[in-house]
Amino acid sequence: MRLMPDAAARPDYPPSWYAASLPPLAPRAPLRGHARADVAVLGAGYTGLTAALALAEKGYRVTVLEAERVGWGASGRNGGQALVGYGCDLHTLESLLGHDDARLLFEFSREGLRRLRQRIARHGIDCDWRDGHASVPIRSRQERALRADMETLARRYDYPLQWWDRAQLRQVLASDRYRGALYDPGSGHLHPLAYAQGLARAAEAAGATVHEHSPVQRLEHGARPLLHTAQGKVEADFVVLAGNAWLQGIAPELETRMMPVGTYIGATAPLGAERARALIGNDMAVADVNWALDYFRLSRDHRLLFGGQASYSALPPPGLRGAMTRRMRAVFPQLADVELEYVWGGYIDITRNRAPHWGRLTPNIYFAQGFSGHGVASTGLAGDVIAEAIAGQAQRLDVFERIAHHRFPGGTALRRPLLVAAMSWYKLRDLLW
Image 1 (cartoon, rainbow, N blue to C red):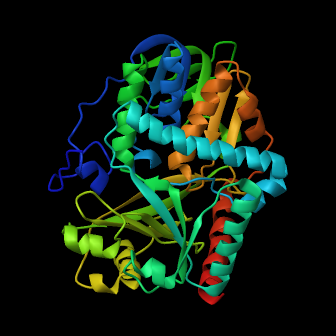
Image 2 (cartoon, rainbow, N blue to C red):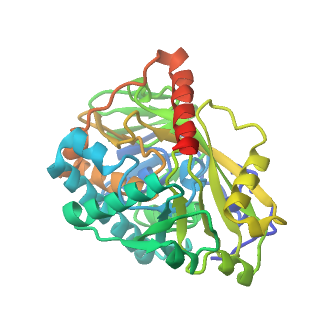
């Protein structure tokens, strides 16, 4: 990857190290006039682009409408950690579906990771993929829970992981904060925006058309639904809604079952190869298991990328840069002289049960949302599953549709304050238990 660490943030992307590290790309033309397609996709993030790629490779005429730029939302701003599973834990999936269907969904997620790697290799997407992820406990109860999860994954889901004690973890992670690690060599991390841009190029090479700066204003249902923009419309046999946290009135029946949540991440200045590798010797991604978690990894140009703040109030946390810097130094006290050069954030979408919410609004309008902070791999799985269903193989989507999803309580006025109150309890639990 050609990194541009000294470049200014691209004016057409929200400021971030991700955007600043990539060369600028000319914008794609917005939609103008009346277009026809077999499939129209709202949203040029991972879900929409993977669906577009899969369908175009099957011979469908696909048009993608993006309100801003490719990867402008969560797909281009996230923490970059690609993990097996979903935003909810396996116990939640089993309570929603029973063990057999939960096992199916877990196997689908494993395939999602395999396909992610295959997509990167097959299309030559230069996005800094690295293997390995560690979930790290701070408290004894968290260690017990992780060890129980490891046993469940091995015995009931045929997914063996590695337990590292404190001494073994300390050999590759220069922090005394954690009691050990549950290490997954099958998960990993990547450059999110580079991956999104690579997916768009692959979809276009397969025959899909991507229009940027084309916000959808209205969805018109019917035998051939239409997506309307300010300057045109796309008529199609099928529509895929992949706007996630950015639907903004297009499908109110979906938005009541999803909540946008702000998440934030920072990047230090380059530390130099020796100092960076002294922090994380094996280049893995790391996340603790607090409800309000910290997560971190290294970049190719030897920065520490550190995330951990979240806002459930629709406003950035006060003193964001200082708060994130303090959290980073609590993990790595040896970075007392290091500041965060970049701090950025954006919305992810969560469901009440943190389980994926994928399915059909009507027989010809498909959607996927509710990735709940676990979307780097599962968004691509969603795109593939929806593409299969449009092509007539809906068995996998049918399993996801069996998950019951409820509206957030409180209606439009109160649902966010109620969520803020609930999250305050979970943060307090992190501190006390």
